[in-house]
Image 1 (spheres, rainbow, N blue to C red):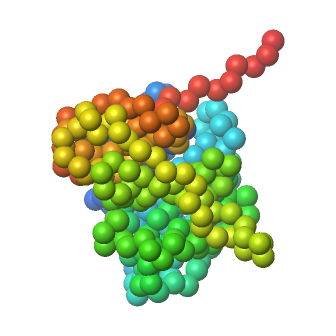
Image 2 (cartoon, rainbow, N blue to C red):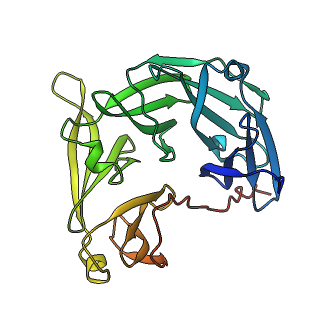
Length: 272
């Protein structure tokens, strides 16, 4: 990466890190720190007309394939914040796929990185009537929007929500409350077969609370590999494993910023 440009991290998954080049604002940079390799991706041509504006993205290795096999999704909105669009780039074709769009109202982008749920990239953002999850199905290359429960207040809960897979592998999220308590939610079919949100399980972080100053928790990241949240407290940043509630300290207290857990990618050894 050029030392003359500034970069903003967008996503990190499967040993790959995705950056936005700030100065040029027309390309993404994909980096494999272990292999010390990079790829530069110019934006789709639809973003060259000053009518669409980039605001998030995601990266993954399909089926954990080794080498430079990857997929990158890019999200943009229109100038009126009423339409959201997604493009998918595949290293196998070396081109951006067809645009997928949805009409929404008063889109407000959120800097939170994506979560991979099953075979879908998911992002959290707000519209005029509340908070929604945007799902991009990588198999069907289709978009869907799921509203969060109506009691979620984004003005209060902005840093207390994170999308994550439920225990069954479906769509879910975590909602932090005061006093080191959290509620997991999952999406399940009701008696009529319609998908609804239901509480999954409550999580108490009692041992973490006894090790920290103050009463606040702020979500700053999620580790998909270990199903662990990263939280900012008055005593520092901690990684908390949701299954056991065991935790470890990552850093001393700092100002708010998102964290992107990085895991090295090792392809499975082939049989002789």
